[in-house]
Image (tube, rainbow, N blue to C red; front, side, top):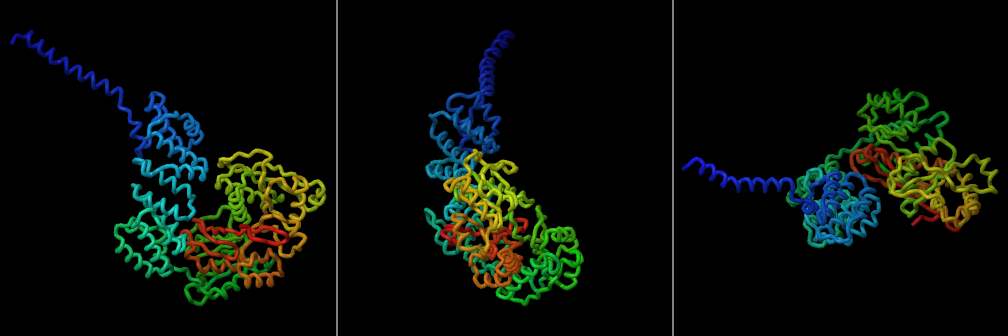
Length: 601
């Protein structure tokens, strides 16, 4: 072979090779579009990347990247930008894009706090038509719209979601949430739940709840019952990953009330408060013996005579198993500063600092006006009100009440809250002919709500006032604003007294107020004891009820400390504990109607 022929042959053979390299190089600079597949994928593109790809795409590809950008913006908390981009979606889309649009519409409503709107949109979606991660997102939406309110619908949504979860953390959260819903129901309600098919998972959950209900409070028997359930239901999602709250119940050990130290001001200016709490504590202790069945000895310590650290040393020397008190806030601060040397002594403090310290051996229980204000925010919001005004006295406590109400209002999806102060009784009397104009200025808390305030639209007024002040304020509001102003009036328990007459109750027509269950005849016998002991003073009667509930909480201290979601029907409200063991109170609501006090339905 001649050398020139060899080179010519190599040149001819090289032409296809070069063409192939050029062809594949061209493909590399134009990557295949993956946006359509990503719509059904759990892969999460960032908003910056998705927006960039959208700008450089056309037709259906551009729409898919636009949908992915909206999803990313919602995930990153950029709700307004997501809403703006959603409004620019083209009218014509393929089936997969329409499904994604439907899910994004739901997620946008949820981000805006519009749970009702989200639920209506979810009802229009067929889960069987969804693909890939879209199914998981649908069921997450169904869970979220229930707002953690126990119901058969939430239970069904959680069970449908369970097999779609992949990580251990997601599965544990789902199991814990399912258990919380089940245990919030009665056994009859739980057994009545049905699904579209004969669901073995549901039957397993119902059986586990029966095992728990039949053996709750008896840890050894509960452990045996759960072990038998695991043997019977080995494939159930909870068999290898029990609910955390159930594990707590299985390991529960009751706290001893064999010797209770009651630390109260029993002399000095605050003695009348301490004595009435002591009376309520002892009255409830007589009718509700210790849960353990053992006898309980009560030991009294006067916080007006010695510093709290000295009293704690004496308490330990006397062999106390539980401390109830102190009552005054400065004494609770002393307790917290000295608690590090007494970590094994369980304490139920009867007050709390503004920022309670979370410690393993301390719970806080108080009749705080902040707690009542948060309860009022939930109640008023649930009644469909949107623009509240707080009418408060000119005192330091009003600042705390305003912050508590506004913070809870925003948690419930509301916007700005207005506050307005009124003066002394002398000023109220002087202005009786001019009335009270409802104006107010926004409470200074960070805005989180979806709503914005528009002046002139006040539809609810929450009033903190004494009965005497209320007797002037309500008529003055009507005088200046008209009885048909549209603003519903609400009051705290501070404005309620058992000594007012029929004329006063008629003047308060329509006013709604919260108060402790004891004074609403939930426990007539104890109410009579409280009123007799306090000379029908409603303020002191509430402290009597607090003393009664202090014994109940002490008697269930371990459950309060160890069992998530544990609640008690108390004389001061429905009692539950936050993660830091701060006892929260949910109060009933009433209203004046034709001179009578009736429950708010």
